Amino acid sequence: MSAPGCADRPGWHPSPNHGARRNGASPDMVVLHYTAMGSAGEALARLCDPGAEVSAHYLVGPGGEVWQLVDEAQRAWHAGAGAWGAVSDVNSRSIGIELDNRGDHPFAAAQMTALEALLRRIMARWAIPPERVIGHSDMAPGRKIDPGPRFDWRGLARAGLSVWPEPVPGGAFLRDAARFGYPCPEGGEAALLMAFRHRFRPGAEGPLAPEDTALAAGLARRWPVRG
Image (cartoon, rainbow, N blue to C red; front, top):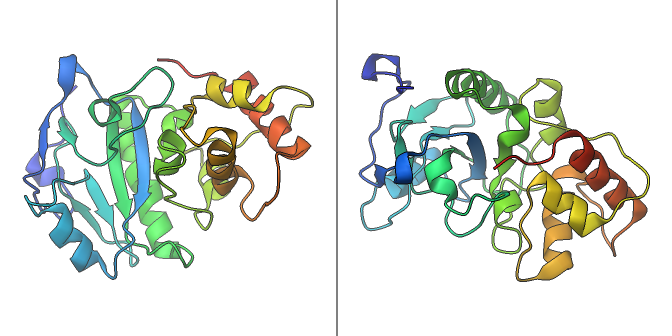
């Protein structure tokens, strides 16, 4: 499958920080990030700086602006160390989307609307299912926290662009989280629980609770990871 041509690209702003996807891989997941920078302009400069050695396929601004930095067929440098299911080279298997947000305030309505429209196009183009839209913290728990607890994952799921579980009593948290795709981080259960709660129980604190276990079981039952 080929990526869109230049005429189809919103706000084409090329970054030199990319390469070929390894071993003939095609994107079958999307990874969402926040920039943690002061402005979209600062983020664009960094994502296009050869010395920074970081990039993403897209950047979405708070007003709904969308810039494409890397062709979807190419491997952008956004995910770093981490894994999802059996995938350890997440960059070769994903589309990376950066959201202009510092992580300490809500994501703007116009930004979320633009993100939803962008996701629909990407997911249709590459046949990516909603359960393969994940956060940076999902694939790198303990190392990354974006897009953070202020990101509206539930709203994205209502739009059919991600998933939200129905709780299932019982289960085992670590086993079921791994069945959904979460890796086992160096920080163990505590690091994984933080990443899980940022996405599915924002604001929750304290030790592992039955609510966490039930949600993880719901994810594992409905969306066991593939590949």
